[in-house]
Length: 339
Image (tube, rainbow, N blue to C red; front, side, top):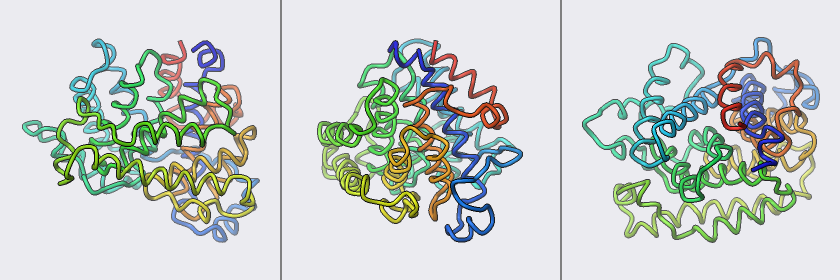
C-alpha cells in the first residue's frame, strides 16, 4: 500500500488511461498503413489538439464516481454499488457529451437500466463480451481498502451491468487484478504468470453475492460452468500473449499477435502486449497501442492504465497530461485513491 501511494498509482493509472484513449481516438477504425500515411511514423504520434477522449474515459469516470458514492455510504457491497453505478451509467447515457461513438451494447443496456422496476440483471446483455466493460474497470485496481472478494466481485458486477458474457466478467476481473498487481510493485516480467495463476484459482468461482442469478439468464447448466467458460477463454488468450512477448517485433501491429481488441479478452491481451513491449517507456507503449488496426482507443487506454499503475503519475509528460479532457475529474478521483 505504501508503494501504491508513494508513486501516485491511481493518478498515474487514470491519466495514462485517458491519454491512451485520446491518442487512439483519431486512429480507431483505420488500418495501420492509413494511420501512418495520415499521422506519420507510429513512434512520432502526438497527442491531438484538443486532447478529446471517448466513451472509454467517460465510462471509467462514471464507474469511479459510482463506486465513490457507494463507499461514502459505507462498506462496498453489491446492492449499494449496483444502484450507484447504475445511476452514473444512466446519467452518462443521457449526457450530451455522450457523442464519442459509444458502443451499442452499452447504449442498449443503459436504456434498460432506467427501468427501475426490474432487477439490473434484466438489462445485462448476456451474449456480449465486447471490450466496453474491461476498458473502464481500472479504478477498481487502485481503490484502496477493498478485500480481494470485493475487488473481484465489483469488477465482475460493473461488467455485468452492461456486458453479461462470462468472458467479459473474467476479463474485467483480470484487468483490475493486473492494475492492482502493477500498482503494488509486481514486475512486468512476472505479470502473465501471475494472471494465469489467478485465472486458474478462480476458474470455477461464481460470485453469487455480487452477480445474483445472472448465470441462469445465460441458460448455463450451473454457475460454475457459466463462469468457467469466461476464464477458459481468458486463459487461452493469456497463452497467446505469453507466446507473443519476446518474439513479436515492436514494429509489427500487435493486433496480429493477440487480436484486434473488439472483444474483451483480446483488448486485455493486446493492451498488455503493448505495455509489456515497452514496460519502461510508457509514451512509446501508448503510441504503439494507438497505431493498431483494431480498437485502437480501447487498446491504448488499457496500455496506459497498466503503464500508469506500474510507473506512477510523474511518468506522463506534463504537456500531455495538463491538457487531457476531464483532467480535473481524473485528478480528483486519483487524489482520493492515492490519499
